[in-house]
Amino acid sequence: MNFGNILFQVSVWTLPVLIAVTLHEAAHGWMAWKLGDDTAHRLGRVTFNPLSHVDPFGTIMLPAMLLLASGGSVMFGAAKPVPVNFRRLRRPRRDMVFVAAAGPAANLVIAVIAAALFHALPILSPDFGQWVGYNLRNAIWINVLLCVFNMIPIPPLDGGRIAVGLLPAPLSRSLARLERKGIFIVLGLVFIVPWIGGKLDMELDMFWWMVGEPAAYLMRSILSITGVM
Image (cartoon, rainbow, N blue to C red; front, side, top):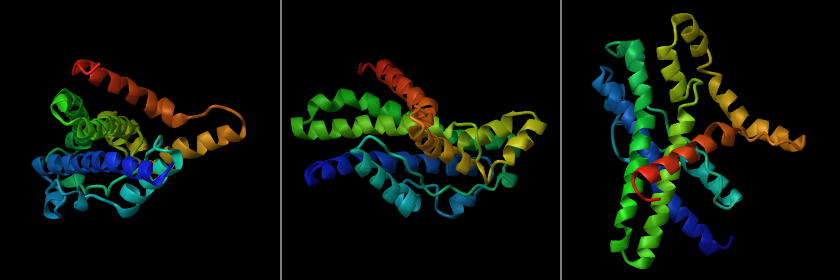
């Protein structure tokens, strides 16, 4: 990949990533604020300013390294989690579900808006329209990936917290105990299991099975619903 291609890849991924992670985290904070916990609001995290949500390594360095190393085919990263004091929510068990679901829901809304904006590309100049088109395509893909990935039912991912709020108390408590270890389980499934599979000459791409396939289906559905394909 030459330097010009690298700059192009960076230019058409940076904006979609920043918008996706910013609105995802801001949605968590906004929902918690409306349901009784103003922790994120007091700390300035209910904002569209990406600088408030960006983690230097997780949001910038890690995705950039993966994109460059893979030629633009692999992207993984994270923003600074929005602080939420679930005990301050008016109905903690129920409201935890809404707070957790707000982030993936925001990503789904962004993906639908990005798809709808494809209909505006013909009014743009060809070169600018092409650049915008790549941004919109990447915005859809990034947001459906974030939506599906975060819905994996393992804490501290959003899907795990939703499951904790919905499951019967005994199962809920057992799942909640994974809060500190859950991210290592997820990273192991995403990176370690495929690496082991490669050593054994086996196809064990857990990320694609758990996230990639559902995200690709969701993207096709959004493009179909919005009349893009």
